[in-house]
Length: 252
Image (cartoon, rainbow, N blue to C red; front, side, top):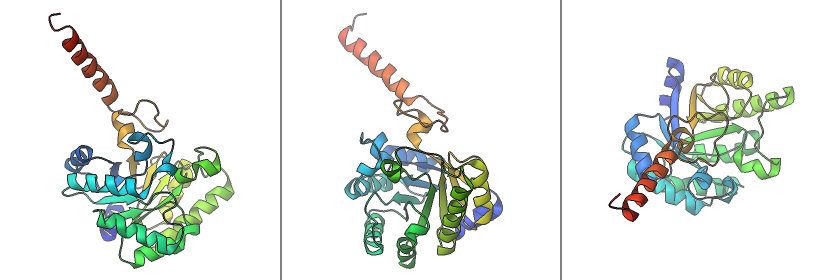
């Protein structure tokens, strides 16, 4: 996987990725020809109704990873390590191995320099790992909300340090979330691995979105950077209303 992604970056062809949490969505995404499918802990909100990703458990992630992998034939599947399941290198490796046993080809965790020991032990065990820097959803309660990163020179410097450290450790790709576009572009130029942007501008080597945001299936919240290209929620509402009317008033 690492060499494939490196070759894509060298070729200049951007990577296109999306999230999945269920068999039918995974099957549809697999047929669409994405570079990888992420079983993201965002499923906590868009599938399970949690307030944020910190409520997602390892049992949740294993359940959804298995479902996604049953729908996928050709696309690599990456699974998130959920909150508080990689506090130590030993715990991180155990969690990563469980997700791989559930079918994932790679795993992803949040954090840079602060989590290098966890990153290294997973990679040294032969498990491909995707890094994640910038706005970290699992830290939302500590930080008091979702805040854009890289606004100050100090933040930009810290982000670059995180990116370079993860790249040197051997991550196959690096998710850069909600980072000032100019900073994200600078990071993308500095690292060998491809960067996957989300809300970080077009200067990254690829893009990822939560599929529910893309297709409009979760109308109660959508981040400002996500453009909906469908209205699944509207179609469900229309179809259900039509069905109810047909059942209650069959002769009309």
